Length: 339
Image (cartoon, rainbow, N blue to C red; front, side, top):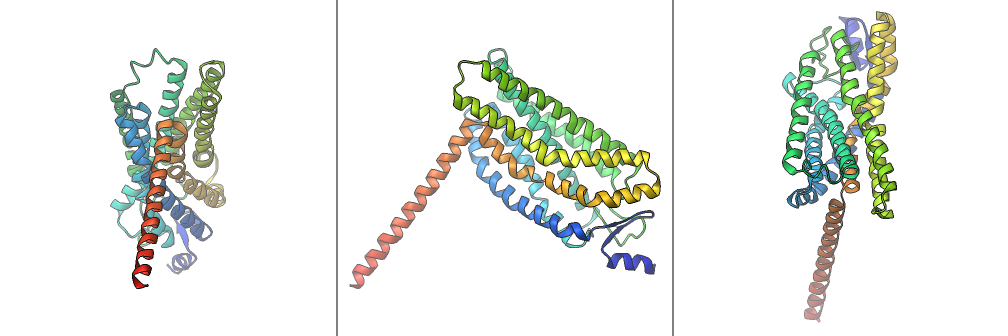
């Protein structure tokens, strides 16, 4: 019992076979999540208006972008909970239900974002490669159905996370953690490999093929000007960049951890988990930044969104200018009256 108390004072995550030090990652994780919360909320709220305008104009792409933004906002609203958790030395005292809900929205947003980026890539690829043949299928009601299926599929799959992961450390029920089980169990390791396969590698292959076909087709087309080709190139770089920066590090480390579980002994597994904890948790936090960079993708993906954003900024600037002139006029009037 004394040993357990000492470990608590050392700010550790415990179970019957492994001790994971968390102190080094705490401040870094809090910083990342605070930045993601502020910028993600700001950028998504700014872009959601122009996206809705695009849907009203019967733009199919706007439906995918709105679904992506809605998923991001659901996750962003859980970020204060994670900041509180890390600031509380990885102790979750808000109840198992709230832990399950926060974790559910985290993992759901991660893979809903991936699959919706995949849908956007396929939509762009078909629209450019087969512009006439796919017009019948590029209708708004089909886009709503596809987005709905993505939400249902991902949320159904990640309901398993609520069952497989644990809230409390089995060594001491007073030391509660949320979605941090070290070392992982066999069922979680298998589920992680499935997640990496169908949640990351498969969409990555699809997106890579799409953005290999799109620039090739655009370069061959005489009807696309240099500005249009540049837009396609930026969109390709944007989607691949999101995958490389936000999603790839987490899934690579998750796959390595899961494979290592089956090949290492108990002592080796514990040492390996200790070495992997800091980079893995940082990669997990890094994946949350997709809610910040997704709105940038909206601007790259749609001329309409970009033009609406410019119009919004121009109107805001004009309002500020008129307000400034009004204040100056009132000030001059007061000075004149005093004179």
